[in-house]
Length: 429
Image (tube, rainbow, N blue to C red):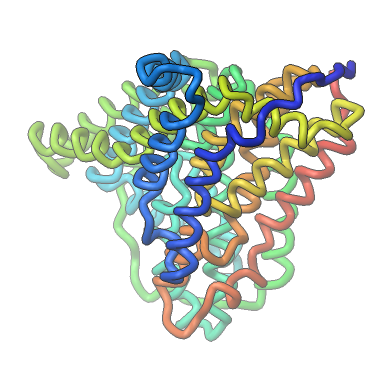
């Protein structure tokens, strides 16, 4: 059902967000390093600009709006989930869960399906740990080693790892992108997962078929056995199954962290103090994204009050005449923000509230909007040559550039195609 948009908003209210983009992008382009300028510092500048605007309101009133935006219940819940996800990820990693998962797969992997196997391993690890970069760090060296022993282009192996990592980043119940997309659209993560799997699973199956056909002639006889402990893989399975069964995500993460700690202590991977230290490190590892969430919440609240969000919505949707058009608008919005920030989580946190407004005005199913946000951000993040995923993968090898990997990124491109098919072909309720 179409709704008429009457508020044109105030384009000047977007100055704080423009300040963030200019300060972030200018430093990144000048230094040729998209991680030189911390996003937190850029949003500090944006916050200052936001508080300096609208002379009709007192500074006290503007600070009140800013802090109310920071303290919004969705922002607070998101921060708590980030903390618990960080604890689970670091405790399970510290007790050897990632190493055991990779080694177990390598021990049972047929030699002619090595690249296919790398993709599947990356899918499983990323959906279990909720981080694409962490997955790439763990598996990229293995892909490089396989390339060296077989003589195949290293880009094929790295492309398989990046693709699998983006699969989990898009689907994992503890991924920061999933958390941000679900919370900003006001849906349960399991419902967002059910919508997402309709896009990601066909893309993954097509990717597997491509790897089976194109790399089956690659042979490698592993000269060593890889030690693993199945019990260390169990926390990942518990978290994955618990989330799919609809358990509260905070309960699932607490259970997974406790189980990882018990296994780590029982296998002497660490003692009780080591578990506590790993938990604390996991919390601290999420500090930047939590600070960003708080600052973005404040900036968006002031921008919204001053009419900036209304202007963006009007600009995007002024020619939209249908629900389908609204979904396309959300896709374009999130891809643009991700290309500017080179971080799909930040892109969703910034674009999520705007997407929610579009969702409400065009009666889009929030599960679909959450899925579109996450999927198109992961598609964009997975192919931009200056994104962390490609840069981290390339750093594991010598004499290869991001462009040498992009040509082998089958999964992200197929994911983008499946996401478009989802918008144009999937039946709406």
